[in-house]
Length: 229
Ligand SMILES: N[C@@H](CCC(=O)N[C@@H](CS)C(=O)NCC(=O)O)C(=O)O
Image 1 (cartoon, rainbow, N blue to C red):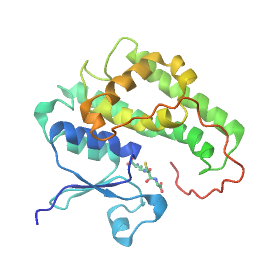
Image 2 (image 1 turned 90 degrees about the vertical axis):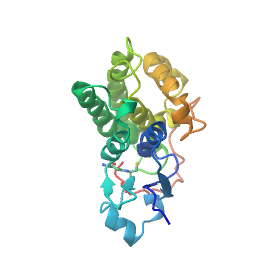
Image 3 (image 1 turned 135 degrees about the vertical axis):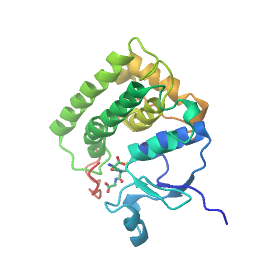
Image 4 (image 1 turned 180 degrees about the horizontal axis):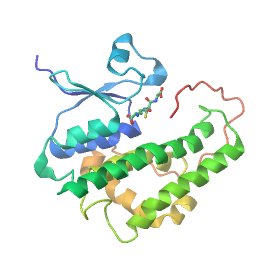
C-alpha cells in the first residue's frame, strides 16, 4: 500500500486549519489522524512529538515535523507556482512574521481569556479581564494593518492569511461577539473574506461567529485541563 502524508491533530484544531487549507490550495495530499492530547496519547505518538502536542506531520517517506509554522511552510512550499509564500524574499519574511505573532502572542492572550471561561484553566475574573484587554491590543495590530489592505502580505492571498485566520477562529467561535467585532471592523471583514474561500471551507465547512461571548464558567465545572495553551 502506498503511504500517505499524515497530520496528527484533532478536529477543528486552530493550529491545523491553515496547514490543511494550504494543502488543499496547492493540491498536497494529507490524511488527518485524529489525535487529541486531552484524550491521552500513545507511547508511539510521544516518540513523534516529545512534548505531546499537536499538530505533528509525518511525510509519506517518514520525515517527521513538529511545530505548526514549520509544517505549514513545508506544505505551502510543495507548489512554488501557487505563490502561497509570496513572490519575493521580503514577502516570505513578512509571512513568517505574521504567523509568529499570531501563533505566539495572539494565541497565548486568547487562550488566557477563553480557557478559564471554558472551565479548563483556573478562573480569576481579573485575569480574564486582563487577557481580554491584551488580546485586543494584539488584534489592534491586525486591525491597523488591514485598514488599507485586503491581505496581510503582498496584496494577495498567502499562507499568512490562511494560517492566522485558522488560529483566531477559536476567538470568533467563543468570545469575539457582535459588540467585540464592531471594535475591529477591518479585522472582522478580513476574517469573513478568508473563511468564505473554497480552500478554507474544504477544511471548516461552517465557521462559527459567536453572537454573545462566553460568560464566567459554572462553578461546578471541574478543572481538568493541564495544557499550557
Ligand atoms: N509550539 C507548538 C505548540 C503546539 C500546541 O501547544 N498545541 C496544542 C493544541 S493547539 C496542544 O497540543 N496542547 C496540548 C498540550 O499542551 O498538552 C506549535 O506551534 O505547533
